[in-house]
Image 1 (cartoon, one colour):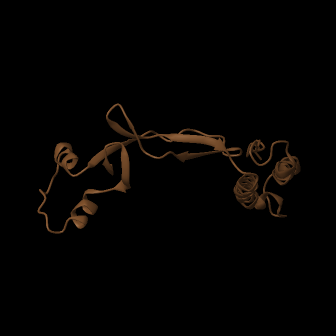
Image 2 (image 1 turned 90 degrees about the vertical axis):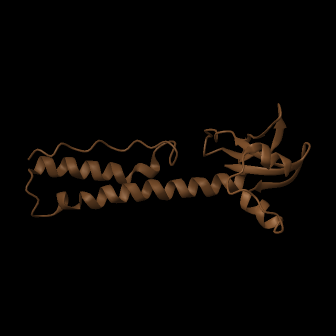
Length: 158
């Protein structure tokens, strides 16, 4: 659980912990387990953190807001804002690398279909060649790297 050290509605330190309370007060003997009312006497309060929101990774970012006293309880909410141009570029590059990594694994796992000792028919070899070309063409898809349609894996019938 997260805690806050506060006086009234003013934040002194966040995040805070019971361990930090003990180290900040070395001359005080605290119970092994402290309840909320005991912590309150020291200005330490539990903090409820709102669940992280779902954001569009390509264009948005979510950051935790400063703790706020709402109806006698400390809460930490999220603020959603537009990602900076630099963040958008970095995220798109990271996503493109991940899509290419997955694509490359799919290519490696089907290399055998293009070898001379492949046991499938020539029609099957051509189906696999088309599948592999579609994998290579993924970076040219509209919406890449955020919207990717992987080709359908051919049936393995000979």
